[in-house]
Image (cartoon, rainbow, N blue to C red; front, side, top):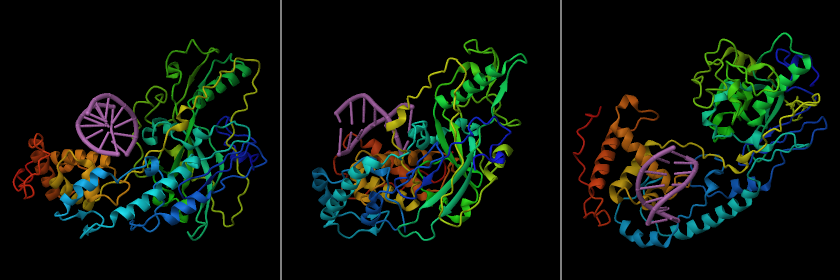
Length: 483
DNA sequence: ATTAGGG
DNA sequence: CCCTAAT
């Protein structure tokens, strides 16, 4: 229970601990529903909506993946793939070998239209319906905690610089066994721990003033809103778009090492809090340093540097000791489905003495920010399909490229393909050592460069059907003379 | 809706 | 990948 001293993490000022309770339910499918309650009387939460079922069942399956949650982010834009223009050019393509990443040669593609129409209408419907509930619903019983601050990463969670400054949570996870319809992953967050907060005040400081100082420090963190981080095996999962399934969170084994962190967003914090001069603006004559755990390289830099660059993130579980300790403690797996009462993420009940309460900057403008799409590295076969298509169509007709080679890949938009080509060209130019990710066969990269140079030259008359033969790109680049 | 580029 | 300006 929340009163358990051991869970109050006495090491830190119990600012974020209290009698409030938090219950978090994360679901595995499209719309995670998480609810927070700040009161003992837990409220019911995480009711799932039928949408999820529908989307899962109706999703047309050209996806080989067993159980891939419908691309919720992909639905962000309703992609209209079918256009009259396309059908005008389509016949022209018929002569090509339609090598698509998903199916090799596609003999014919009649019938595609009807199929697609159906799919699209379905998707559209789903989209509309989902849109209403897409945002994670985080209910607060008293409005103390904004839903956004919990469910959304402020700035596309990638650059979570201040991450290390976060609080950690003990988690108890439980997963329903099978993943039929009830395959939800349940978490119980026992407690959140406050980030290391170093406060330096004069000896003459009064207790009341100290409280105020602490409050301001906390406020400065909360002001920017909080975002939640997820740790698996002590490693931070930075990709917000991965599914629990992909991340392995749904795996029972991993629930053991699952952790949450609260991270200040540090949208705009008092610059003076850096390290040196006591901020004259502070109402109290103290300086507050927010630092990471002692011994950590990035000291005193939370406020000043946090926004610029993410600290060299732990790669292989080399987590700062403090953090390690945080995430590894108190984690048990529930064997029954009972959601026990959880410990609180308490907002300091600033019932402070008559003092200027800084009106917390609650403008969570990211309320409407949409989740970033999940990262889907192009597979070699996809690259090949792309190269093939570009060789035939050129570099200025991404929509056609899309439809030629990626029509069935809903998650690849023509913009994506264009971007991928861009990176491919770049990749092909750099040395193999500098390349990352799944290595692309040099042969393909050569074709990329060849096609690239070819189509660059033919920009002017690019629309002219480039005579019968495919490109004559046999010798543009001389193998690996790229450095 | 697409293209083309910068971020 | 995202965001935008320009088509």
